[in-house]
Length: 74
Image (cartoon, rainbow, N blue to C red; front, top):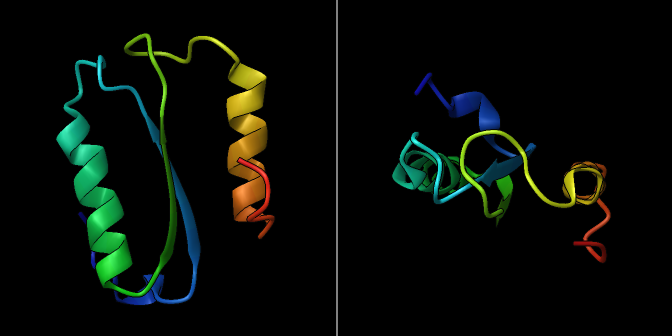
């Protein structure tokens, strides 16, 4: 990962599928490293593997709401 010293106080949203060929551990590490550097991190998973599945627009809406600071919506 790149240097994360500029992450403090910024919001990030990590969305990943445990069934993806890219290991879920990478998303978990990103979440944990960002938090350790003082970032606010939203984290969610979805079923289905690589490529978005299911309620794609709902997943996007939740991510955008989090990034905009709306902590009531998920």
